[in-house]
Image (cartoon, rainbow, N blue to C red):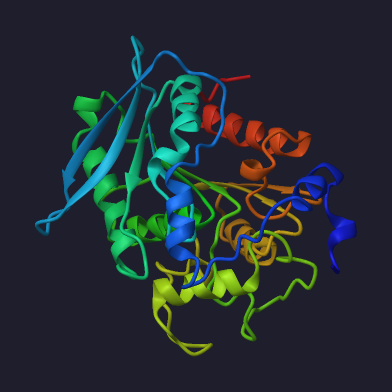
Length: 319
């Protein structure tokens, strides 16, 4: 294993005991079933109520969302949460505890969207579902009690791809502005792990989420395409050349995550184009470490800093 010596010692002990997590056509059904019962952890947030809604997507379909609201507090804004899973698996209930905690700590409404998954529903299905959820938040802002100028988006891994794509889509359509995006180890560029990757990182992607899993998921989302094909930047936002006009961005990623190269390039373009950008890199951390390594010191620090960034956005004077 070429990168084992780079892994955080606490994370390495867990990795040595973990089964293979390769995502492929052969394992997808099993992986989906496992994720249905998977719950990410967060401190208790007893003052949050949740309710399920089915919103009109405008084409005869309905999109399911779960809305988390603080009790007895005027919301400071709204956060659209887009779950991870490579855009091929996962459900919003995975993030139930973190969404409750964010809603309580930031005093904001959190809306978690159940978007359509590839390969059954390839691009742009999932992204359009997220856009429908964002349109609904804007349309229902008065009912939700949130200011329209303080609506942000957040996502991890594949949800980060959809979050970043949504920011580009809303910028270009100009109808539903976003105030910020919060991305945790986002999956941004379909070229990663292929011969077309702009800046390969040879010590990345050995653990948890490798090049084979990444390639399977991108092929599911985009269909079989040759390297260098004309891939829409809304699908693969790491390909975008101009990021001016997207909202302030927070990114956190481990330095041996498969996505480290694409995340660095994305952050560099954001900074070049004048977008307020905060980038956190965690040494020795591979993909998804805040989930499978939740009790380690580095995972707790990453999660805390991510949550703190969200709280600061909704409470600008927060210390």
